[in-house]
Length: 109
Length: 115
Image: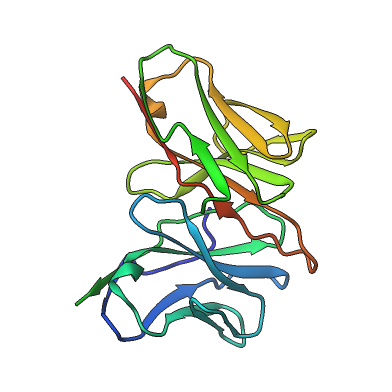
C-alpha cells in the first residue's frame, strides 16, 4: 500500500545533479516524506526526510511542493557510487516504513 | 552501518529445518525491526518491537517468530523453513526522538536460501 509514485528508472551523468521526483497526492498533514536508498542488495540507507520545509544535509536536498503533493530528492553532484534504488516513503512519524518499488538511478561516466 | 550487525550473512538450509537469524545493535535504540526482500521488490515488514516487552506482527509474519532477548538483540526464527522463505532479510533499529521523528537504520542483511 505504498502511498507514493516514482518513476521506475532514471539516468544521470556523473557530476551532474540527479533530480528524483515523487508524487504523494494523498499525503496527510502529519505525514513526513522520507527518502532511503539501497545500493545493490545492501541494507537500505537513510538519506533525508522532511515535513513541509525544504531540507538539506550532507547527502542531498529535499524539495517539497507547497501543497505537499510531490517532492524531489536532489543529489547535487552525482557519482558512480550513487547508483542505487531510491525509495520515497510517506509515513506518520512513528509508523512502520512501507517500501514501494522505488526509482533505479543509474549514474554513468 | 557497523552499528547494526546481522549473523549469519549467508545461509543455505533445507526444507523443514529450524533457522535463527540474529541481529545486534550498539546504537542504544529501543525499536527493532525485521524485514524481508524478494528479488526486484521492496522490503516487507515481518515483525517489530518497540521495547523488550513489546512485540508486534508486521504484514507477513506467518511462518516466522521473533525473540527480543535484550534491548540490543532481536532474533528472527523460521520454525520449519520452506523454499518460498528464500529471501534477503534485513534488521533495522530506530529510536523516537524529539519531535516524534523516527529514522530507521538497517543492517547489512542475511541472504537465506531454502532448498
